[in-house]
Amino acid sequence: MKPCWKGGTGRSENSDILFYFENHPFQPVIHVETVEVYINKGEYRKALRRALEIPEQIKRLLALSEVLTAFPGDEVLSYVLKTLDEIKATPERAFAYSIVGRALYSINRDKEAERYLEISLTEAEKISSLRLRGEVLGGIARNFVLSDRYSDALKLFRKAVDLLQLSRGFSSDALSSLLSVARAIERSGDEIANGAAIEFYSLAKDVYSSLQFNLQAQYLEERMELVGEVLKRGKSAVDGILERGDVEVAMKLMRFLPLENRALAMLELSYWFNLHEQPKLGRRVFNDAMEIILVGKFRPADGELDRIARRFLRIGFLEEPLILAGVIGDDKIASKLLGEVALAYARWGDKVKARSIAEGIRDESVKNRVLKALEGESYVGHEQGLPLTGGGKGSGAVSEDAGAREVQGEVEQEGSDSVSEGDDSGDTGDAVQLRGAEGAD
Image (cartoon, rainbow, N blue to C red; front, side, top):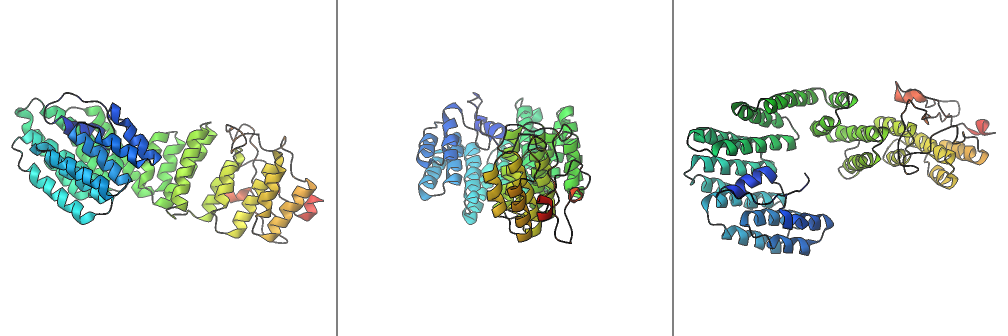
């Protein structure tokens, strides 16, 4: 979630808690925006100094908790606890304890985190105003969500909603508080990557309906149906949404997929962005997918990686297939893919890069055939092959139907099987053959 805290609203004593609903996590007021910038740059001292300059105690505590999450250490924790001690009013103090509890969970100090969260609930029960107690419980519930305690969070949200519904006849501010809590519940559903999200959406929908926010209630009803489809059908449901062009919805629903399928869906999305001439977004999503594969070690099947790599090849993007070939475990599949990438670079005139890739091919028979083809220049010239775009060689993508040549070739093994366009069933195009020595002469 991108930070963008907003300035003070001039509300009464509960303003900081409503502020939290509308902006948390970590969305600084104007002079605090640099806290997040410094965190992203890894500049601990500057981030800490900026956080300590925030005059509002709750907002300072929120900023410090983010610094603690990014840079765990006793120094920043001492400032967190000192700020907590400065907060005296019961509503804010109850809420503040939950902020500290969430921050401690984020740095794996679970026992201490549990204690602070329990204290926050005890403090909340001391609040006599139904509206304020409901508002505070909603804020505490949000921190339970951010601590991955979804079941407890849902119970607290329900209790918060009940209290706020009861207070509607006693306070003109109750409707505003109820709407803020509903948005916090919806946002929580957006952040949960399992079936529990449906329960959060359902609760938020009920609140919106009670407030006559019928369009928002209908939106959540549709969202619940989509989530149910993804949980039932998996990646095929996300693929269908992406094929319809509902990119934003598809991106939101990918989180419900197992990580290896999520990585594959993200690679498909990267391809979609590149195909529709949005290479910056394509590269960003591709990098996120590779982080899941390389750092999380959730690797899709080799055949699936090969299939999506060939799709990139057909629209003129070579860096992506080259990277994907490096994570394919099957030597034969990876070698054939690398051979096709090497010949594509040669068509573009980058013979040095082409030879470097060919030299790294693990399957000796494939390597020899590709090197022979490169030496004999038996590959198709770039004017007959891929357009000079994409993958680091250009700045845009071209339509598969508008002249992009298929680089999915055949690497013919001596007297054995070959890989053709059939490896990516349903795809068509002009195959560029990767011949052996007899084809290179």
